[in-house]
Image (tube, rainbow, N blue to C red; front, side, top):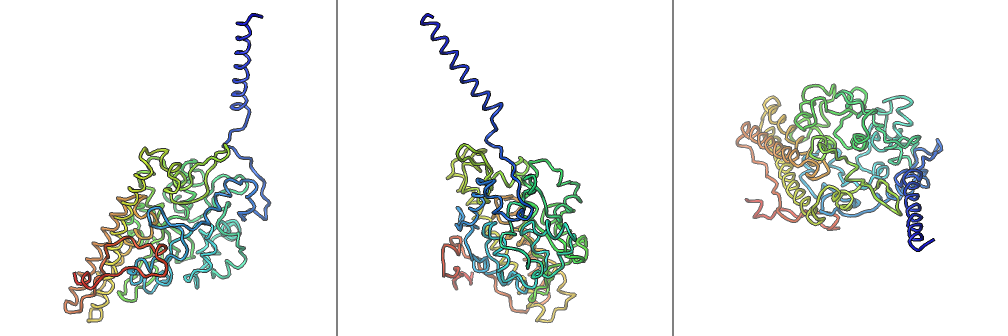
Length: 463
């Protein structure tokens, strides 16, 4: 064999080896994104720790939800015992007479769902419906046996048999037998069905949004049997949801509590992230909660979905830069600007609502009748609904900036109209003081331990 033939033979051998490797890798070897389905014992399916060995990458990332850390922009975060009531003292007036004036803290990671629930000062005397979104125990144990019966029972009775690892875990979002995404929250299933959406047969990408949205939404407990329901029959905007409550579509439910100062029947908004995101630019582009908050990661050549449900700015490369071509610094600055502006509007709206309650109280003390105060009370009910919709939605404007800015503007408008209506009834009554929003660095209680939030100076209060 001549030298040339030897070179050709060597090249042919290398080609055979190379293409053989490719064929084996692509056609025979299992892709790195596939995982072997594990059999979880029936008595362990609700325990997150039972999935640890079978799905170590997912489980280890899920346990990162235990971390306590501030947000990259200073808003939100996962620090323990950070009180909204200290950060935004107008909430004490706006939620007066309701449990949220007793304790209202920034939410920690999902792994604390059970611990923070059973220790909250708001717990007694709630009903079983309150555990609906704290884990699939309510579905796999209670709902499968007796439907919504658990919802109207005392909460102490419902949580008594639950173990520490029975709360939010793998089975909350995955079918334990197939590990496919699932929506177990039946109120969400029923509400979406009224809109013509069969959640149980939704496309996979839709499920990547629904699996989070089943709990991150606006809801109420029906007066008839305490079940969870959602006010989406007219649409997902706060105005459309307010009309749902006003029109009688909520049945016997008319409100959450009567405010002791204004006498208005009030509504409490509940973290309407889904309601906000579902009409957003990201939603229209097919971007789901999971894409941003639980992005794909790689470890030792294995691709997996991160189960650390966190601020996307902590995983910017995987969460944002797959689509956006700006730098990490530019993206963080943009989000912080949105957060800053939204929070300022939120504070002004909340403080105006607080003044409205006190102004209506002053008009009642001056002799205005319930019939005369009906208009002002309806306006503050509506205005505070818009403010709370903005305040309770956890993105500080990012999920749908236009929608939340509109909600803040409507809140300020309705609150001012409520003040004007009350003042017309008692023009000589003392004017309730207007809380002054302090133009200062966003107050993050986690970054100022042991200190009180800044307050207006006498000069500012006189402005």
